[in-house]
Length: 608
Ligand code: XMP
Image (cartoon, rainbow, N blue to C red; front, side, top):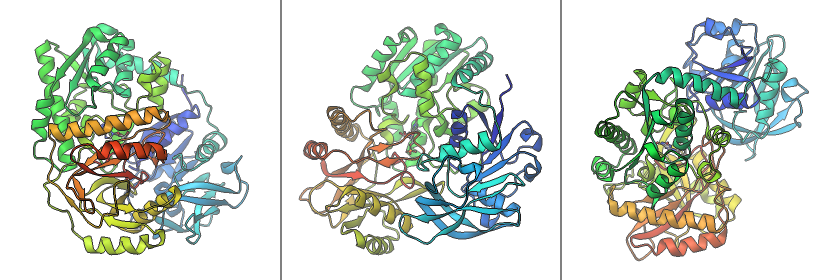
């Protein structure tokens, strides 16, 4: 069946595929297109959405795309960068400035089909450096924004031309933080493009089955099965499409798993009826050897990814599994955050996107049945395939496991530009009556779609939750070089902090495993495990001054999220925080404890 479809032009913003999944949720097929695709590739769509981008429209960056698409007689909606490009193309002006970050209020200026069913003021979500300063003669302003922090109005947050059927939103309508963004996208797709909603998850599964059978032919698939939600659903999808005898599973204990995790995973695959072709190998020595002496996050990620492939090939040979394809439970955010779509900035190299794997993908040797789906869709698919609730609703656990939660350091403080950071943070944080300390280490984050490897700030002192969140968002938005804020749960108000040397050793990983298991048990005991998306526990080789002893710091990162592309910090119950304060600070070698209070962006969920 030929479905009505929308093209989402991926300018490399983190959100292009999120737009596509939101459109699919409406029951309308959405396909990702590259900006330089020939005009013929756009002919089949009944509407086009232009995504955001890390590029600056004001500087003419990324302006070499297929402009002929503006001549097509179908509605076009631009979001963020796409909005600015539409304004510019039709005679408006885009300037560098008017930056907005996070929530803002959109004031809608008149009744319009795009805003059908919505109120006069809507919460929207912003992340941009450039803005539209004027629109061309055929356009009108449909809405402007005021920021929650009371900063002045931003004009042209929504623009449109009904005669041309061209529209633009400065905000990201596709993220959940734009409260009625789904409705706005729905209005564009269903009311303005008049698309028929005929696409569904069953349609996806039927098409995927055919695709897998065609790609795999008579060969078999050897799947890396960590036991996380994605590899579990991928294993069952492959079994359904190819039959159980052509699907072999390999579970590798890479030494970076949670406490007792490998044993539990093997049990789970047995319960799913996949035990017969499940192979288990303890390769922790290989991984620890590859990680020895590494501290830089990308170097660690690449070492882990490469070791997976080495161990996998070695095991395939030892087991005599020949002519196989490599199966992976890769889902969409893994590829977009590695820069897997043509223009996205490399924020993190995911373990299943290292160079050797990219080469195998180019040769057609990799099978990834979930590569176009987000986590919620994977879970939905898993449910329709009859996978048990507890297997599907486990917290996501990254492929490199505790490798990205065990930060490493040579012990030398990373203090470039420290005086400025300390001065600016003190100025900005003054209004919050908290004691700020810039930390001499870095963690990975994401700002305006670009990777940010910057310093965290530790806040000490008492404050209510909204004040803590406000302090974190104000400092990260206003001080260049700060991408994360944490709140001290340990003793005193540390006046200084220094890194202690620490690499990926079994001893440090065991310590992290203990802390992580205390956190997981605590979340379950308080009945909130299912409410939150994920709660990484991070071991940071940092000694916080103020206490009597030298030791490392544990950071808790509980977040709410729907798709991992954005996240909000969670306020854990006071009783749980008290219990964790006692139990974690009693672990040998731990002297500091803090709670991450940063949203994503600008902090990523994992610290590396
Ligand atoms: P970040 O830290 O980028 O994480 O905000 C987004 C989501 O992805 C998970 N994550 C990974 N998953 N391989 C994976 O399979 C990886 O290399 C990886 N890195 C991060 C992370 O736990 C979160 O759910």
